[in-house]
Length: 476
Ligand SMILES: *Cc1c(COP(=O)(O)O)cnc(C)c1O
Image (cartoon, rainbow, N blue to C red; front, side, top):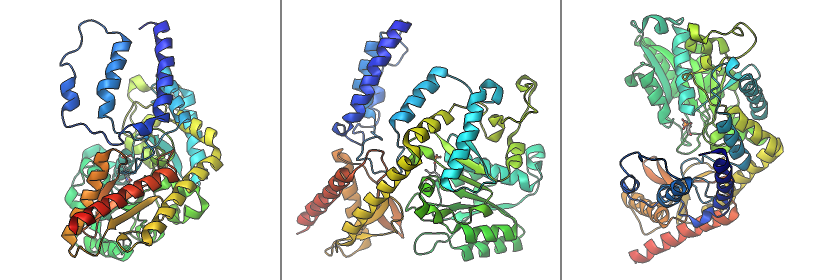
């Protein structure tokens, strides 16, 4: 491809992107293809001769697009969103044009310094304590792994890094509702899955601090060393908020590392009325939230904050001869030492474009708008006798189920709600996912897509009612 072809193709792609996003509601939200359908449509070998872009693009439209789930569709209510925005897209374009590998300050000073400044902007916007320092990671899973590894090194005086495990018997604590990334991180860190203690929760699915303290004491009595607690600010099932302050006090008493996982809900602390969820964060050692979920910044972009920057760097730093530079002793950040990978993308650029384009007020208005939409729908659901809400609606996730009087047992209710979910998702008109709360099959509806409005919320609610009515009619 020469430069004139690139120019022409790129202009066409920009037009395609705008048309795609403007007409995205014409696509089924969830891809409707069968397993292996895409794989079998693709040739089994690289073409011998180079192909024209027109042909490549034609296949993209015909073979790839049908196999895509449209995460930017405003009727995407599943999981947590990975929302996006035009300024973020533009930054991604420039990032790939620059093609910079931003592992250390010298390999692109602007990337390192913009990152440092963006972390400061986020810290202030979100009300994260001023003595924390931020760094961008690829995902919350990686940030949580960094936290657990740093805790491990900090408490062994950096000895596991040096000599491997000796006879340490560490234990890790989180609630039964915390994210699977914690189990994964514990496995990778060599701490042993059997040493995770899943602490019980209260009636709104938040970690019970008394049960936490009991578990810690029992472990100490048995000769274990409690290493780390992971508190969830916004669990994935129901956005339950573990009480950070109460947990933080326990962690201080027993000298245990506290990592706070606010991957999704963290974005909401830019609203003063939602900041209560991180009350006590000054007692924590590390904190993570994902601008790539609810902050209009394309996946991937995770903001990781630590109180003790030296501990983080000491855990990860390496300095082989070929990476030594004359700026190593100066006041610059070499982010390769702040996490797992050496190579790093220039993610700060997206945050800069997004934060400048929206402004604090613009971001806050959008987030508040999503919360309002969820409150509106929750109100409608609460007025009905044949539906029930199964968890507090503090943000923009509604956990609910259909529970008509004609169904008497739980197993049948579970099946009924699974049926509703599958037929809506198969229709392609909206996409939602489920969880289990107290054994109850729970529909999760997350209202966080960048362009979602009352219109799509009304539409999905009508779909749910239609489906419920159809099932009720079949019954009688
Ligand atoms: C989404 C989520 C994660 C994982 O985020 P990744 O960035 O995909 O690793 C972790 N914890 C919670 C609470 C989440 O909602």
